[in-house]
Length: 418
Image 1: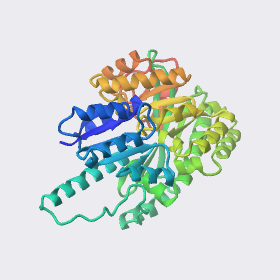
Image 2: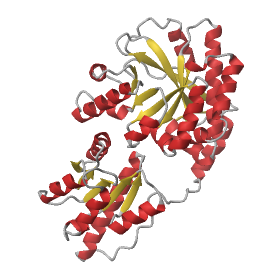
Image 3: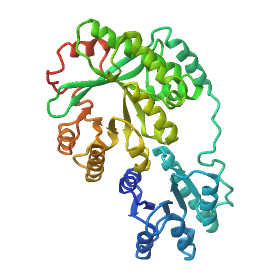
Image 4: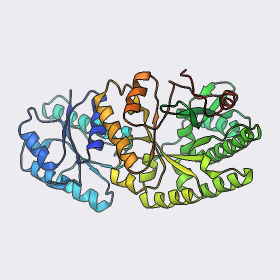
């Protein structure tokens, strides 16, 4: 089993990375700065197989730490990955000249982290085997993290793409609505619109399949606009039935958010149906927002100036710097289900979630926990002060008909757990 040392001064990010690697069966060591890491290495035997280190840290930063390692022949050979929010060519060159093997630019996704870790460990294993005379001389890695060209579509993807183009016209695409519940009262307080596709021959196709395809071929904006129009039309229909007004969350892709026309599309839609913008909650992922912070801040300000609510979805999976999040104007923080699952049995996740909720409340943000499935999870997040939840404990995503029936009961009738 490989051992990995994480050197990162932000405790939440350090714990998130550690939890991810632990779930992949890596042994994990942690340090809050370079000086602490050096002291840890002096008393660690055997030495770790890989070091993941932030650049900007107090006491001894990443550059100072790796330079100190280079003076020790045993430590100088440990593969080294820099974490940084600084992504210029000069930053990369400085890191590589110091002896780093790879770079991860914050925020990065879980699969990017694991790909970089696996790549470095595999290369170390190949080099070790070579020097022991067990394998031919290894060549340079053909794949460099972050620099691969977009792959062409396979025949299967081409066929699915063709079907996706006609799916909207043929009414194969539809929406489900998953209830959001107030912790304590169990009142219905909102819902999230979730896109679905039932193919006439293939049956139900997961959004995890067709959403990435739509992003790859540039169809995601058109799909997103359909979702917006469908939600607004449905909200207007509920109102025409005399049903209570309900907050609806709409997921927005990176292409749609950073492209032109999102604010105008939403504004025109609510004006067309004479709907209050405050009942529309735009859901954006953490990673999407901090890729270009200044542009994101401007777009978020535009959305909120028109009265729309903004939620950061899947929070905790992007490993972004907390200082970025404090700069972003939004209203709701949705904790990713990976931290909620079995939180009653996982002290690390409970600690991380408690810190997230505390930070969010200090910033006057509402907190929603996603993926709550058991009463044990419910009571744990409730005790941590979470405001709302969304998950199978109370309801799976519902068809329009079923959600309409639920809404007809009123907003002050507690939901019964599923």
